[in-house]
Length: 305
Image 1 (cartoon, rainbow, N blue to C red):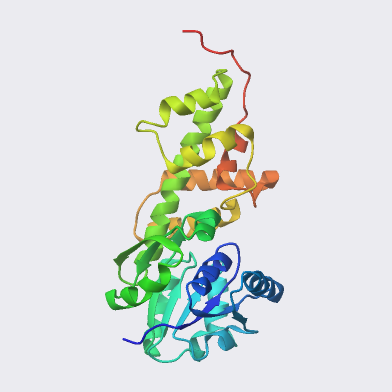
Image 2 (image 1 turned 45 degrees about the horizontal axis):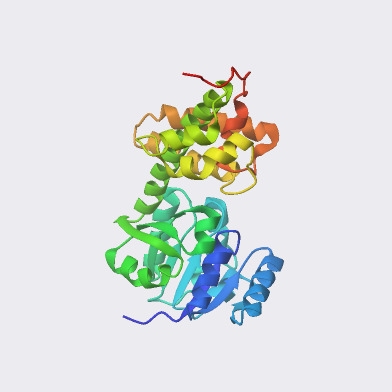
């Protein structure tokens, strides 16, 4: 098995930029590409300030040429289509025997299409969406859900460990994306319940920190509660994972559920709640801004018994 030394990283946004930076710090030869060239230049300059050398490319094809491995982290199906299959796309430029890992959250159908196209060119592919948000990317603590062959995932694992805390192979091509859909469905449901709980506590005049202390050690505890209870109560939403992206992900999840003949009423309802928050100007706010659609209500005074 060829050792991976040279890597192209396509998509240097709030997730991809830090992930690619971790790879460069780990000693890989990294070439970055971003559709907005100024972002790639800023990424390279920031790493140079740390004494870490990287290069940039002007097209996905240029980035991917002669690389042992290509990683992508863009926005959606259409973006991945462009950077892989477009007129200057990465996939035709890749070397047979190389490895393609897609960290974008896309549809399972797109993941299966990428896998089939890669296999035609004797390239191994892994669909590997991530969870953990911008903080997880910056801290190198992402959770990665992988679909593809066991051999491909194991080849990719040492590289992905540079920015990950957990890497799980969940099945064949598309399985990583379907697992990410399940992840987003769970988050949506938790945030809907958490929003109502925060508003109930506020309207009752309870001390929010005390309520958190009381319930966060039991069955209600969640990552969202631990990290968003206080900020939701304070109306702070300018961080984390944007509602626009959550709606994109839930759309893929609902489409896949329909394809499988399943009903997903809670996820569908929360998706519509998020549409309301988008209409309120919250499209780029964190997903915890779901609480904005619920009026705070009059406080009743602190409970005395």
